[in-house]
Length: 348
Image (cartoon, rainbow, N blue to C red):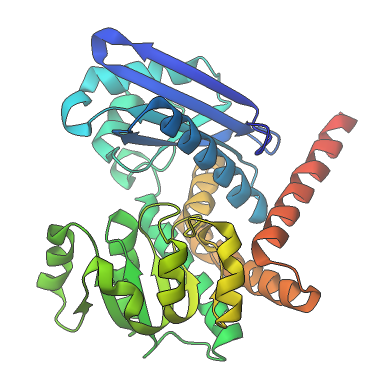
């Protein structure tokens, strides 16, 4: 908590429903916090706490970089999704959300479905990222993937000197909700795509629909020569050993932080690989949810996704011109923005 300057860490347990949750609130200075809800069977409670704090921290960073009036938080649910999920489980979570009186809004992440979110909605109005059929602006993974495309184009413009993704060799590691949406967008862009995932069924769904996509085994994916390596898999997955194997000009993706050890940025730099952490380009969902909260429609989202392109390009150029590590510059910019907003609010 000291490292991330997190605001609060709460524990919630309801034994009769097998509900055990950790709520991390990183910041509410910019506005009500977006709390991504993740249901996962962690090895232990310490691992769950660390994940909750990280998710909340990156939600704050993503909102601040895009100048959105949203704070950052997380709701980490501990347990096996196949065993603990029930309607009452999520309705109880909705009752808990109401205690925050609009300072905390729940959105979905790994292990939580739209049906689960709808159950929460039976008890609470403090939810974001709803499907259109339930009064929202559509699945947030679509906006997140579209935002990634904007970010990839900005990175390619700088590093590869091209304004298009057409014909570029792009690896997508991890074919979950976000990875599969990104692949759909890359198909539209006519990119040359290679995909991998530990779960073959996820690959097969795409393979059955698209003929010209290459498949690679998870342990061999780092050896694939490509222009862009997009990690949409587990956070902090790529080890120092695998960093050295990457044969790409660019490393980025939907994962907030793909590197297991941030010091490995130096290895990438030596190998002339541009590393753009995912939290700089994966904020399409933040743009959608902030518009949903403020009552705007889909057209405004499409327009504002261009902010990701401009923001990404500006950060890369500034980092390069000043010899600053991109991660450090992005964090500094986000923290400066939060500090300035905090000072303005003190005037009141």
